[in-house]
Amino acid sequence: MTTEATATDLQEFTENWREWYRAQEARIADPHGFLAITDLHWLDETSRRFPDAPGAWHTGPDGVVVRLDDGEELVVGGTPVRGEHRFGVLAERGGVDAVWGDAVIEVARRGGHDIVRPRHPDAPLRTAFTGTPAYAPDPRWAVTGRYVPFDEPRPTTVGAAVEGLEHVYDAPGRIEFDLLGQRLSLTAFPGPGAGRLMVLFTDATSGVTTYAANRVLTVGPPAADGTVVLDFNRAANLPCAYTDLATCPLPPAENRLPVAIEAGLRIPRERGGS
Image (tube, rainbow, N blue to C red; front, side, top):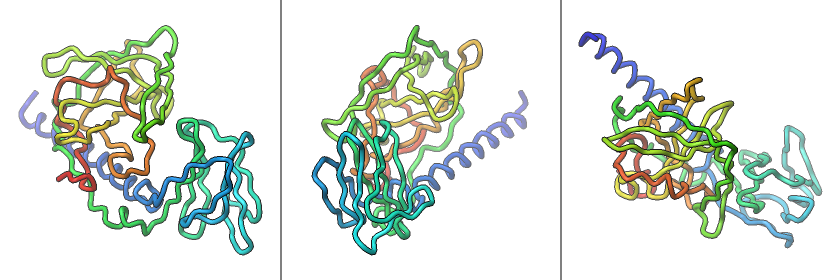
């Protein structure tokens, strides 16, 4: 490969990473993204009102219910609702976004619990956001690995950013790869989109230059021979890296890597990063 070709490839690699980074930052800064969350309300059978959402909320065997007072209105699925509205039983990691003026009221289920998380565009955490520090992209952190499927998906219980909460994922397999002279592997969970995988991990930079609890890497569908590419330049932060009002999963114990992966997103400024 010529020097000119190498320079062109590096330029393309860097620009592709910048495009990914810009998309990440846009998602983080979205008017109704996780920086806009103003509180995390855990529901039970007692009907309660909250200062950052309309109505009185409770949950039970038949799911989440809100009772709106006269003059209060939510828009659910494009339809205005007044009085009592039943959201029904929510799927784990599922939810509904109800619109209230310029805010969105997230009604969701996390770790077996129903929650309400209002998202207001003028939340101080969002309006103060100035971007996430990141390592400069470097092709040496994009490594080829091999996906090894399990005979059957393995239910895998992991902790959460919220103490006492647990998440359960059906792990379809693991990814084996070599990095920094070591043979490593990561348990993979189903990712966003058909055939894609997600790995939660920590490494020797965690708590030093990257967020201590977790980072996440999305991996494209494996090739027919199991080949995958792990581009750690695209190791992203989960919402809990920015806010205490998130319920993010922690990596399984086997995904705590002993090497320092100096790639991807770093500790957010909201947590003292630079």
